[in-house]
Each structure stands twice: as C-alpha cells, then as structure tokens.
Length: 58
Picture 1 (cartoon, rainbow, N blue to C red):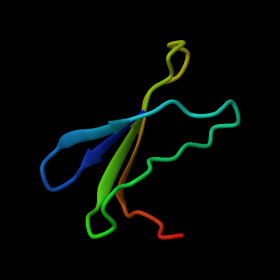
Picture 2: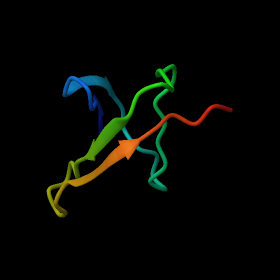
Picture 3: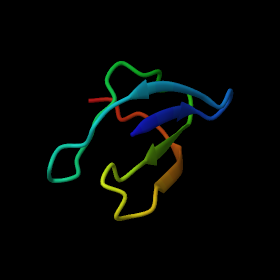
Picture 4: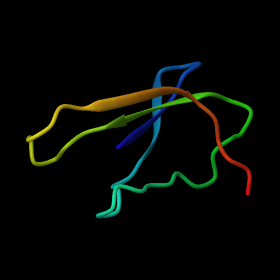
C-alpha cells in the first residue's frame, strides 16, 4: 500500500494492511491531501485507489 502526496505525486510512505484490511500511516502532515493505492499481493484482485484523503488528528 502506498501513500502518495497529491501535490507532488511522490510516494511518501509504504505499509502492509492487517489481515482485517486496516492500515495506518503515522506521522504525516495534516495540512495536505493524499492518495492511497492498495495492491493485492496475491494478484487475485485489481488495485484500489482512494484520493483526496486527509490525516486524522487523534
């Protein structure tokens, strides 16, 4: 799974999701919007993309 900064198109973080599908990217700037690209490493499903996302401040 990639976290892409929308302003630059740069992949700024990578992670794997948990078995239940949850994921987190820690320590990202809440002032910007991001796109998340999720891949199925088994190749059974196509990639999923979600854009215009913002960090949640706990």
